[in-house]
Image 1 (tube, helix red, strand yellow):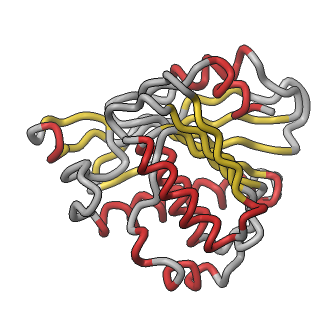
Image 2 (cartoon, rainbow, N blue to C red):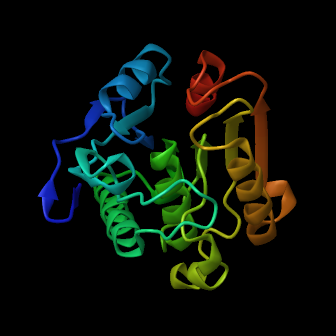
Length: 222
């Protein structure tokens, strides 16, 4: 995947133990890489599922004093009404849609592909699913938020409401100091208004900071 004309390494992939008939594309958080998540999936994988953990391109991040680090798009601030990197979010989302298209060409139908991610990666997965013309199996969104939330529901029509029936699993730690729990709960409310209450499962984890405990990681697989 590329962003801001900066290339990123090829994704970390956990191949299916037998013929791949489904796939999980999971995006890491800010400053991370896909290797750790690939390792986690490798330990608890399902035999017919291919796990793809892309690496974000390296770019300056405003939130972190313009230091360069792996990032799907720029983040200006974590305040609730902060300006967002609209062009960067849309560019990263288009790149992710291209990755989905590639898996379809590889023989895995889009309705057998789950998008997921942690923090910034989860945010991008949510935005992509809601604006995609590809029918997806579901979304796993960990410790994250919905980018450009005020653009919805209008933004979803760009995908022809393709994923209006998609199921979303959201998990968020109640002690998250970076992406506040309120961001997650408000995102769940927004998603329920877009998809219907029965389509969004929001799980709160008391005492969990900005991280994914083993139970949460397991939910990404099953």
